[in-house]
Length: 149
Image (tube, rainbow, N blue to C red; front, side, top):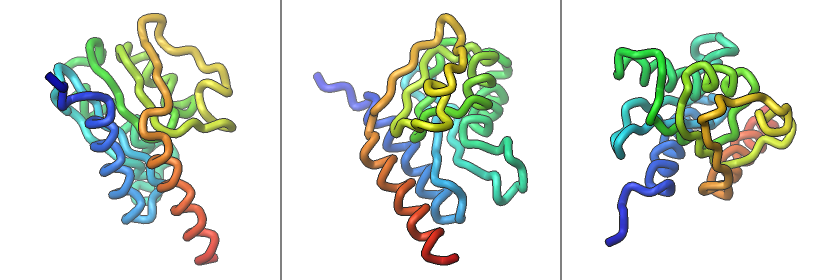
């Protein structure tokens, strides 16, 4: 039997969050945190709205998940995020001890892999899940942004 709760299912939910960010004029990055096939946190970039450079989708999702669980550690949780986490977010994910990070598009310049940011030793990272869809949304955002200026 096919599992309806696969990586593509949860990445689709993260892409919906990214679309919400896009619609608000935020860089379209979305994230969901899952435990036992249940979404416990959904978030998107809020840096413009909150005037806060730390208000990345991952940071918002970490806070929401910790509040939901009533715990600071996100063991047995998986983060689905449309763009490879930056160094700041990867650092926060390290401290949260999240079990899995699944991202869509790779950030060749500012991503945690290119910058060799350490993740928690028990954290696994998987990239490229629905990367085409995530990349297209980001590209469309920046093309529209440039055309407005």
